Image 1 (cartoon, rainbow, N blue to C red):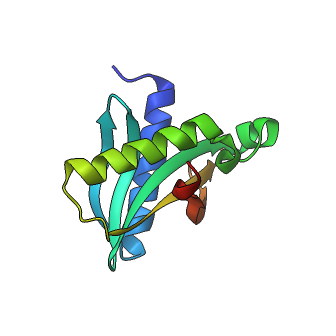
Image 2: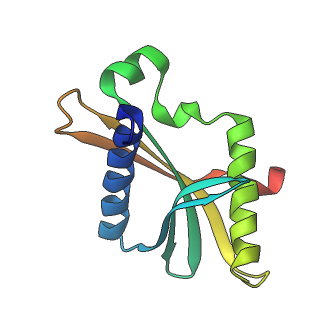
Length: 129
């Protein structure tokens, strides 16, 4: 049985997926998981492949610990980059594929009735790793 934390994360990913679909993204994969790491959502829009990290917090948690987008430490960024690169190799994408790593930060009210979405494109510069 999933933990409350996992259920909350799943809620954030569902909100993010719906947001992406409304924004004309085609969802390619959700929760791509390998030993090296995990990508929450992989989508495609136009000719760009998007590897998306979803971070979700309650308003109360965000006030106490900071915004969800601030919670992606450099070691986590490095894992996301390596996992994205692995995905590209595993799926035999050509070297000239356009791709980027985005973050969707979601802040949900305590009643889980409203969500604020902050979509940050090109949030992680994979060339610096």
